[in-house]
Picture 1 (cartoon, rainbow, N blue to C red):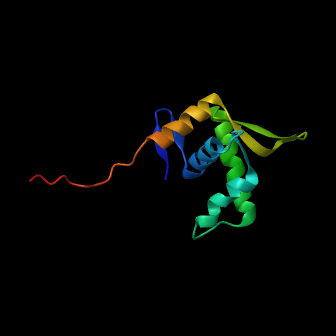
Picture 2: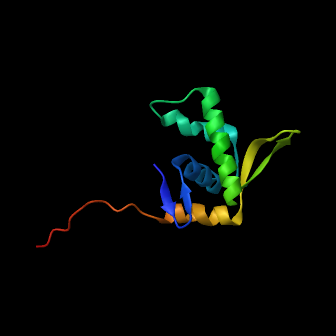
Picture 3: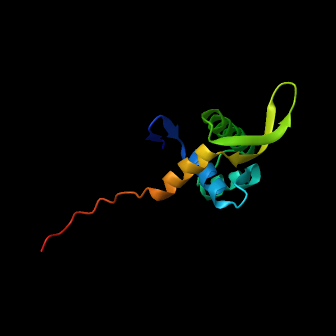
Length: 110
């Protein structure tokens, strides 16, 4: 499920990354922490697929300017080990925490 906020559509994993970054004191998150996202899922992807999905989600967040990646650069590509929230990412993560889900209750009048 994805939610569209203005110009940005973020997946549940991307929201999880932003929330974990907001929770940590240094605003950094390692990939080991991000793998815990799949611990609660019933139908988990394979370990290799989990890392690929996490890597793609992190790269998309980097493109949107919500996080910065820290890792090793080789001749072909980057290997991101951890991510740091940017100011824009902090703001977006705080937005997610501030929003409440509306429940389908009907008001009863007496």
